[in-house]
Image 1: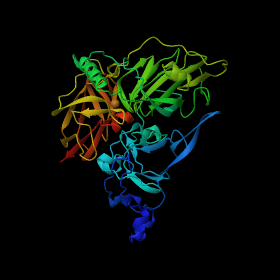
Image 2 (image 1 turned 180 degrees about the vertical axis):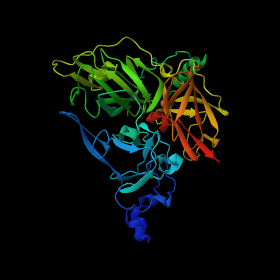
Image 3 (image 1 turned 30 degrees about the vertical axis):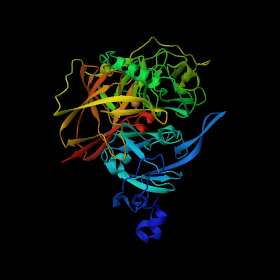
Image 4 (image 1 turned 90 degrees about the horizontal axis):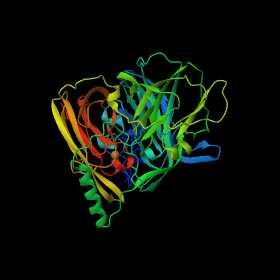
Length: 501
Ligand SMILES: [Cu+2]
C-alpha cells in the first residue's frame, strides 16, 4: 500500500500537511524498489522558499541535432544544475518528484545525517511519486561533490543512475588549486543502456599484483557455473555517449588561448562504466580526487575515473590546434564520449592521437614514503560473485552474504570516534568502484603496497586485488557501503555500517 500525501490529508492531517509535507508519507516500496523506512517529522511543512529547487521529471535531452533521448532528469536538463553550496551554511532544497515512482536524491561525498543522505538502507524516506520533500542539511566537506538518484534499478534500465538524474555540486571555500584562467565542469555520461555479455577493461590499474589463487578460483567457479547451465551475468552497454549532455562535436567546444591554465572538474556520472580521458599534446596536473586536495599534485597523460569518481585537474594550454579531449575507448569516443578543445584563431577538423598505454595509480598523488596511521580496528571484507545467479545478472556477496533489505545484512557495528580499516579483497574479475556514504576514507594500501594521504569517497579496487581504506566512524546511525556500479549494488554488493555512541 502506498500511503500518499492525499491519504494523509484525508486522514485529517490538517493544515500542517498542506505545505507539501511529503516527508511524512510512508512510501512503501514499489516492486523493484528497496523498501522505505518511516520518515521523521522534522522536515515537515516547509516555510518560505527553499534555497534550491530540483524537479525530477521525464524529459527530452538533445545529445545532438539528430539524437534526442528520453530520460528522468533534474529540472529538465542534463547534467542537473551545478549547485553552489557553502561549507557549514545550512541549505534547504525542495525536491519535487513528478514521476510515477518514489525517488531518492543522494548527496554524494557529504557528511550529512542518514535521514537526508538519500539511501533507503540508511533510513532516508523516499520522495513519493507526484509529491515533494524539503531537504535541509549543513553542507560539507568543501570541494567537488555531486548528487544523484539512489533507487534500485535491477531490470529497469530507466531507473536510478541509468537515468539522467545526476548533477555537479561544489562546496565553498575552494581549495587552493594554483592559478587558473578558466574553471570548467565536465560530466561524463552514457545514455540508451542495454544488456550484453561483453566484459569491460580491467587492466589499467597499477600496481598489478594479484592475490595468489583468486584468479584460478574464479575461473573454476565460471566453469562450474557454465556446466550447471548458467550464463555469464549481464553487463551493461550503451548506445549514446556524451560530455555535459552533448555528443562529441555536437556541443559548444571548450575555447582556450595559448598559455591559459584551465581547471577541469570532471565527474564520471555513468551508472556502470569506468571512463578515461586524454587530451592529445597536453597533460593533466591532478590537484584533487573526489574533491579532496591531493598531497602531491602530479602530471599524468590520461585520467581514469571509476563510476562516481571525480578528478580536478589543471591543463596548461600549450599545444595550439583543434583537439578531441576524449575517452581512450575508440568505439565510445567516436560515438560521443569526448569534447572538442579549440584554440583561438585555429580552424579545422578536431584531431585525436591515441596515447601510449598508461596505468592509473592513486599512489602517484600521495606523498612519497607516507605511512598510514594504525587503525583501532580492522574489518575484513571479501567481495565475490555468483555467476548469473539473479535475473541473469551476477549476484555479489560481501563476506559470503548478498545484501538484502529484508535482512539488512551484512551489517558491521562501529563505535563512534574509532578509526577503522576496511581490508578488502576482490575475488572477482571486475574492477569495483567501492563507495562509503557519509564519510571520506583514506587509501592506506593498494595491492599490498602501503600508501597514505589520498582522501576519497570512491576508490577502484582491481580484479583479484586487495585494497585498504581507513576512516573514522564519526557519523551516528547507518552508513551504506557499496560498489557504485548500479547492477552490482542492485544484486548484492552492499553492506551497512551502524555507528553507536
Ligand atoms: Cu562493482
